[in-house]
Length: 271
Ligand SMILES: [Zn+2]
Image (tube, rainbow, N blue to C red; front, side, top):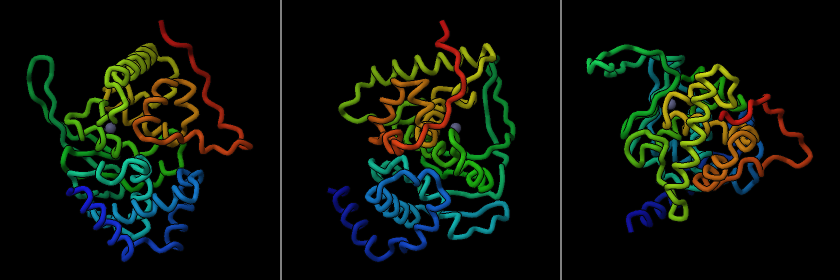
């Protein structure tokens, strides 16, 4: 009932606050991610971005001068993963903090002897459970057109993962998606990447994905939307799982008369 009411209120609100068509066209013109969306998908992305900007506060930090174009750029990218899921998948948090460049974040960790340490690490993006998403504008802008990388999608994938609790690479699956199948496919792919990284072999994904299953899900989600051919080539079963979860097939958006970008030479699966 609440969801129905929220959906009705959002539709009413959209009639008043929808991003003007010319503003939207200018915003997505610099985003290759939006190039291949059909007109219906572009309209849906525009509506989601409008509501995203209405429901999430964009907060500048570190002396950043926030412009409306920055907000639009972030909202358009943030809403691509939920294009066919809906804005409720970003429930439970309300702000995006934007720094001009990479920022230092304090982290605590426990060493093998049980001692808790704290340090400050430079980051380009961070997502807090039930808290803000923090982004570096320089890196958002740089990765907006870079195949295989996207800082905004990475942090949004963490937000989706957090819907089921800890960041472990398991977002809330749909009813028709057996959890055992997701776990098997992702675990096999993650283990393979870890072996490749350990052996110093070339990897299809950013080696940072080997950091943990949660990072693997975020990194391969970046690639799913920005270089889907690489994911389908190297991780076909993961591609199918992501296609089912995001309810999107980014590769199908590739025009038939345009050759796919070349994937790097890859080693075969490690024994
Ligand atoms: Zn991450």
